[in-house]
Amino acid sequence: MLSIGKLSAATGVKVPTIRYYEDIGLLPEAERSAGNQRLYDLAAQERLAFIRHARELGFPLDSIRELLSLSDQPDMSCAAADVIATRQLAAVNDRIIRLQALQRELERMLAQCAHGTISDCMVIEVLSDHANCLHDHHGDRRPLSSQS
Amino acid sequence: MLSIGKLSAATGVKVPTIRYYEDIGLLPEAERSAGNQRLYDLAAQERLAFIRHARELGFPLDSIRELLSLSDQPDMSCAAADVIATRQLAAVNDRIIRLQALQRELERMLAQCAHGTISDCMVIEVLSDHANCLHDHHGDRRPLSSQS
DNA sequence: ATAGGGTCTCTAGCAACTAGAGCTTCAAGA
DNA sequence: TCTTGAAGCTCTAGTTGCTAGAGACCCTAT
Ligand SMILES: [Zn+2]
Ligand SMILES: [Zn+2]
Ligand SMILES: [Zn+2]
Ligand SMILES: [Zn+2]
Image (cartoon, rainbow over all chains, first blue to last red; front, side, top):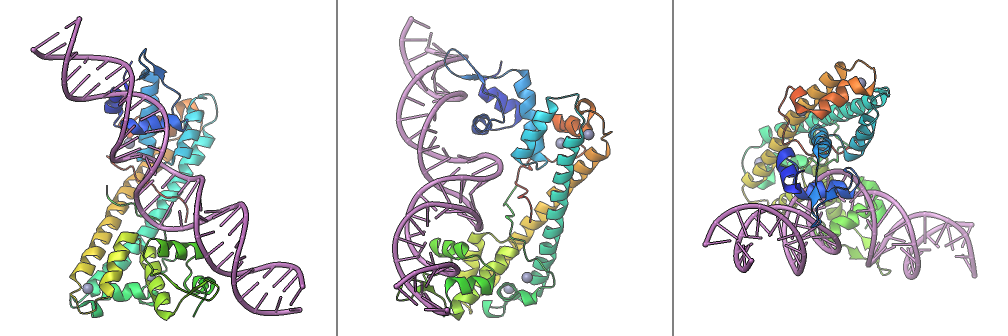
């Protein structure tokens, strides 16, 4: 039986995140010690590892919820699981296409900058008017979500 | 002078979003009519178009804030603007690299599925254990942010 | 004059956490 | 055995970039 800290170290999932997953019902309520601290067995550890890995592959928590409940039913057809993964792959592909359009636009913008003053900077210029763009990146209003 | 609805139609930015931008200080407080309704002039429209376009190119609002204040100082060197755009490009590139790793992993996972039962589905199998993966996609825990 | 739209403010919700306050429990050293 | 400091507990609020709703007000047209 692991404490939440050990489980965190074992799986690479932060302690508050584990509690959050319990809150939203992704993990079952943990057993408690005499002093009310959470205790985890191997099954819980495996479940959390599954969640972590699926998150790394970009699955949203709702999909993970479905995948977990499927994995509890070993005799069912895996068609439903494949649908979820296919949907995820489509989302990834879609995102890549859009990002590549942005990438090209940003590169072009930067290549054209003459490093003078703001008043003739192509970066500012392009941003002011989409007519300066080659691609139709309309509808791309999703977060890039920052760093690593 | 445009009402907020006309401005919305003219720029493609939704009405509540315009109010939100004003709230967070990205747009200056709008003039008001006798009946307390917002009125916008051409300058406001251009500023909003700038914001919209930068958002389409994935710039976070904080970067847009910086870019806007730069664009108000036409005589300054554009170096700062270029830094922001370069940073943005780096973020896009980084994101693409990560997504391509996920893409390959998802494709491999799906290709290996024999379409039998859950108990021998490679989708579930791979998710259970990163050892089944070829790539190091650790640290990829960003949202994919869904549809378009 | 009244009906319908558009607009106003304010609050709450989305995803998926993260950070903090203020408290209790546990494990190890003296 | 006592003590101290780390780790755990609950609860709340903040993050990003919006979106949706409630309930009231304004504005134009018939
Ligand atoms: Zn420049
Ligand atoms: Zn453009
Ligand atoms: Zn399968
Ligand atoms: Zn993996």
